Length: 314
Image 1: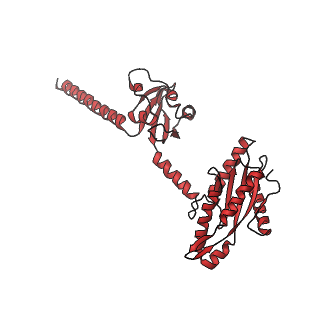
Image 2 (image 1 turned 30 degrees about the vertical axis):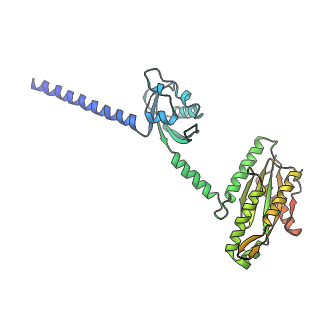
């Protein structure tokens, strides 16, 4: 009898302990900051916790006793890549992950989520979601810093290369698109550094950067790619009649006197080479060579002027 009593007591204690552990697990599941969900073999939601519902903005009704909808149907408005990630997890039979940007909506800012799907038993998939918005913002800030000239605040050579590549890709996607590259080299800038020092030279560069920004549209692109070298990308502009007025504004803006110390001002000029991206087999390197060659012809012709690449400005 004592033996049976002890067995029953042990079973009761075990049952009690299992109940405690289950409540602990449920509390963790419901209150965790990490989103957790479970999908069945057909992709239907079996369960999800509050964090997951908040991350993907699932309706509260989905937490009731009614059958839960397919996961892809709930996230389709935020994340078009869900079916592909599910297929990868099933095909590879191992954990897969993807960063997902959930767009903003009125009153709620956009956020980035990292979604991990792991195959478990019976063809089910365990999902884990974490908010990585701050990490993404830090990464974006670091990328922006790496592509920015610290003196003028303009994009640097890296920033220019990225923008040029994108504009070329856009032109290849739409053969009707064209754009113009202006290569700008400052005239008589070396004398500023030699006669007044590098601090005065830096001031001239900053003022010139602002003048170039004012000379073009907000949709155009201005970068500093070297000591006294700037480039401008004029989107959707390729007719010479439209390009010349912009170049004249650039030269006029760069030629404005700049006060570098009390009673002392400096005046520089700008030699500009223009080249139009013609599409087809033309490359970014060729476009740069054409604009650079045209700019040096402008310098050879007396400086503070401009030249077009031979095939540009039709």
